[in-house]
Length: 313
Ligand SMILES: [Zn+2]
Image (tube, rainbow, N blue to C red; front, side, top):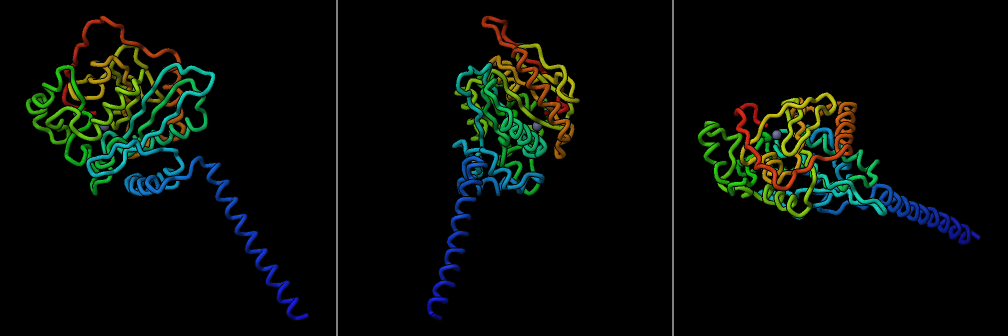
């Protein structure tokens, strides 16, 4: 009788343990389904690394974002992450749009801004546009002990893009007109950095019809390429800063004829409020939906505007 009771008790304990095991497995599977694909070890590691330079973003949020390694690595070997919001069935996208943040490592507010907009796309992506989103192009600059505008090799990625002259002029301009400002060093070769080389390849392959580039802290909307430009995004108002060889605005906007909307947030480090981010995003999508300007074949070659040295976006 005693043995029977012991056996019964043991069976009940095992059943309870077994049930908890089943519940644990089910809840794990359920959470993986709810949050999308489970993060790979590579993404988990990358997110943990990146979040060290991004106060306000947790590794868990980064892992759940659906970002994936693009295959490109920074100079220091950090994967550059990308997320695609592809076309949906039965709807032809109006256009392909590329969104880029964190070109300058000392502008973490731009990275947080792009993460915020990805959350909106996660919720509302309906196939009107085909998006590719790169929240952080320059992880090495962001992850330095004292974050820098430039990448690990001291190159300003927004001065290292190809030009219509095959890159000629960029270095000379830097040497002669910026007083060799190290923050704007364009490198010795256009697209000579792994980050810029990959960005050029992405633009050539994806063929975006508009590029949204987020910078700080000039508190304006800048624009390059065929017009008309958006006049206001949230509180940011249009003020054309001009462009010169080596910038993304010059390469994509002037050389390729792709509209480049540059949002210059008011602060490098403090992202706009949720309400302001929502207002910027709503205005941006409204402008895109109204019809993206196109570059007409045969138009006169773009005049390169030689903007004053300051401010440097
Ligand atoms: Zn910048």
